[in-house]
Amino acid sequence: MLEEVAEYSKMLLDVSDVSKKPKNWHRERIHKALRPSSLIRVTGPTAVIYPAAFAASASAFDEFSEDDSFSLDLGKIVRSMYGEHLTLRVYPCGEEEWECQYSGVISDPGGYLSGEKEVLFSRLGADPQEWTTVASISRIPRRDAASSGNRFERIVMKLQDSFSDEQLDRRILEKVIQEASREMERMGLSEAPSWPAVSVIPLAVYREIKPSFITSELESDD
Image 1 (cartoon, rainbow, N blue to C red):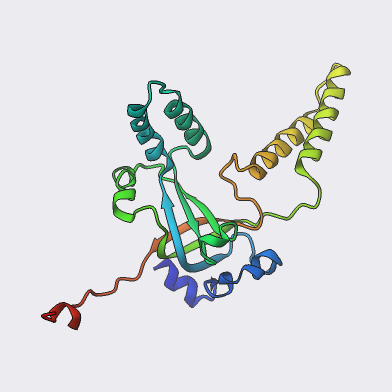
Image 2 (image 1 turned 45 degrees about the horizontal axis):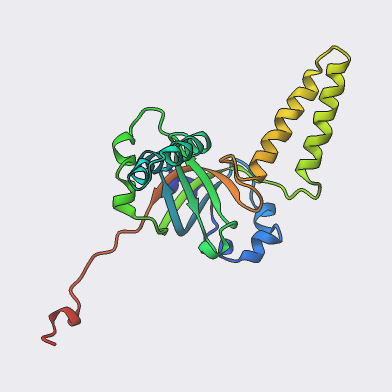
């Protein structure tokens, strides 16, 4: 219903074809065309992942080792990075161009999907499948010319200087948090996508239903 109304109102942009070209991502053509909060529809190889289920299953590796630190550490890392959310990745250019993606999180505050999350892998498998996603543009990362690490170091030095003056500059402290978050994003330690990926808020994820049929090959006596 939402998709039909948005399309009728010319508020929904289908970006499936233009997103298949890696140069549109690397030359920032996609980024210049999109607007935050606008609605898009994209069809392409899509992966819906539930990292928390993998973290819980990692204990199976302990059967092959006397040291269970691997699964414990892995579980902590996965949970701290992904939480209990479902992760959506759309790869319009294919997995070979992994960085050219629409990335989002499917939250489930009411627990409606609690029973579905655990069986995602058995139903969908590990490989991306052709799905259609309707989403709102959440954030369009920018390509920074300056190293985020250098910016972080400079702002930390300013914070240390403010401590030496026996006062805390809240503006500098908030800038430290901002730059630290940016650096974690760059290093892949947060769910926020790094350039050229585009962050989206998934509204609907579905795939086309095609009928199965008996082929002549199946009916052949050979």
